Structures are given as C-alpha cells and as structure tokens.
Image 1: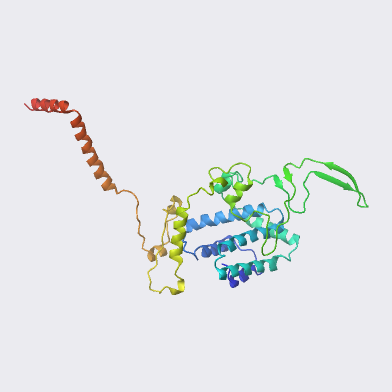
Image 2: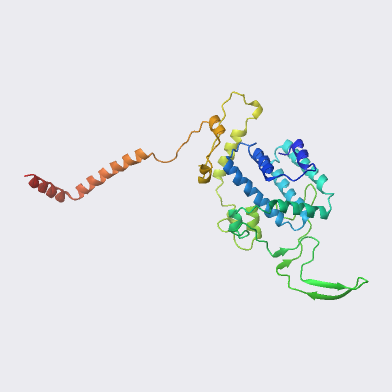
Length: 332
C-alpha cells in the first residue's frame, strides 16, 4: 500500500476516480492480506469506508485541515508498523511526499478540493449503525452537523459585528445570536512529519465519539475500554500471525492453499448467491457445525421420554396396578 510506485501513481495530477475504480482499488488492498470477502461483503465495507470518509470531510473545520485528517491516518499506520523498520520507512516517505505535493496549495485550491470531494460523495447516504446510535446521522442517511464546539484556528467566535471607518478605525459594535454554542479555537495543528495534530478527525471513530459527545455512547464507553476481554482478539491476532508467517515467494506453486471463514454468511450474502463460481471451483468448502445433530437430538429425546414414563410409574405404583387389573377385566 505504501510502495513508492503505488504512491507516485496515486499522487500524480489526474482526474477524480469513479466509484467503480475506487472499489476496485480498495478490493485489491483488502485482498492483499489474509482477509477474503465475497462481493456482497466488499460492497458493504466500501460503503462503510465511504460514509466514514464523507463524515470527516464534512466536519473538517477548514479546507486545509484535510491534511491533518490524512496525517492522523498516517500516524495510526506508523504506530501499527513501528516494529517493522522497512514498512515504517515507507510510511515516512509517503508522509514526506504528501507534504511536498499539498503544502504549496493555497486555501482556495484546498476549498476547491474539498468541494470536489463533497460533490463526489453527495449521492451516498448509506446508514451506519455507529452514526445512528450516536445521533449524528438521520434515518434518511444524511449527517447532522453540530452547532457547538470550538471554532477553527484563526477564526473569531461568531456573534459580534464590528464597523470600521475609511481610515480603518473601529467606530461601532453590534451583537447577534450565533445560533449555537461556540468556543474559542483550541490551537493550530502540526502539519509537520510529527507533532500534535490537535484535530481528532481521522482517528478511531468509536473512541472519538465517546470522548467528544456530551451524551454517553450507550453500551460502549471510555470506562469500559479497559474491562473488555481481549481473549478473542488475541486469538484472532495469533491466527493471523500463524497464517501470515510464511512469505508468498517461499510457498511452492503446488502447495495446497486454504481459506478460513470464522463467521456464517449473512442472509444478504446468501441472496447474492454466495461465493462466485470460480472461487467455489478453487476452494473445497468444509462446514463444521458447532450444534447438535438432529438425529442424535431426537434419539436423546426418546430416551428421556422413556425415563420420564418409568419415573411416573415408580411414583404411583398402586394406580399402575389398578390400571392393569381394569385392562384384564376388559379383555375378559
């Protein structure tokens, strides 16, 4: 993803990609790891990423702050690969390349860039559960913009109109209701290779919601971060390390390959037709059901019923003898 050839191709002057091209690029990036997604799951993942990106572009305080959002992404990627010097160097080179390309743009060019991105995303209204739960997205799929919080760096808090004479001297002031609860700027973020970005957009969205929103975040809260059981996550990480420890170049061409699916398919995926025919021809699917067999369950139910009848007879022996006597008399 951070290879020099890919980033050079990505950052060269060109027309905006279409949704189809974007989905193709992201599909190849997702399938470059051990993860494999069928078309239905990939469509949902693409829509989720697009909506998260649209939300961050909408909330960008200034057009130039789009760089700070990208730098937060790069800082997170740098933290993931800090123990791998080769990949860490690729991330740093990508960061330097972005600084070189975009730092010389004017504020007007950044505004044009932001409007172009919003035009590209204006018809995307996919509903996302975390956005709906935190009441920042309407059921129609449109975002709710907050009318409170700090103003961008270098901007005064709205609510005051100052009047000047031709000589530049202030001659009067008047106030007006700003329509929201705004506070002063929290400062300018760092546009360098490292530093405090100040802006929190571009970081973990769920964690950012719980820190920023006034209302609690429901079942997920900051206090519960340390209480979560990491056992399942650690086991999945171990599985990923074991499956990815062998490089692709060292695997013989004739070596058997396998793919693991930890979770059952969703009904939407089954309606889409499941995996493509070419994938079904390549992989032999083995389903392991962690439920009881129906025949075994019915046999156990019959045995349990017999025990119940015998216990009832033992509890009421006199009634049983009387019933037998009446049956004999009927036969006579």
